[in-house]
Image (cartoon, rainbow, N blue to C red):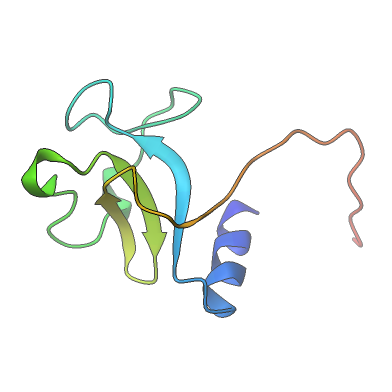
Amino acid sequence: MKVNIIYFLLDIDIDKVFLGASDLDEEGVWKWLNGEPVKSTLFRPNEPNDSNGREHCLIESRAGYNDVRCSLDHTYICEVPTKNAYSPN
C-alpha cells in the first residue's frame, strides 16, 4: 500500500516526497520514525552522500531514496492508523 501511494504522488508530478526517515540520531544509520531500519538497497546510486555534512532526512524521488537537508520544503506523507478501512475486494 505505501508503495502505491508513493507511485500515485509521483504520477501526479509530485516528484519528491519526505517519508519520515533520517540519520539524525547517528550519522549513516537510517531509521524510520518508528525506529525500524531503512533498507539501504532503495537509495539512488551514490546515495546517501551527506553532502557538506548537512543531509539527514530522506525523500523518495523517481530514482529512489535520497538524503537531503531537513530544512527543505517538500510534500510529505503521514501514516495514521485507521479503525475501519474500505476495501473493494
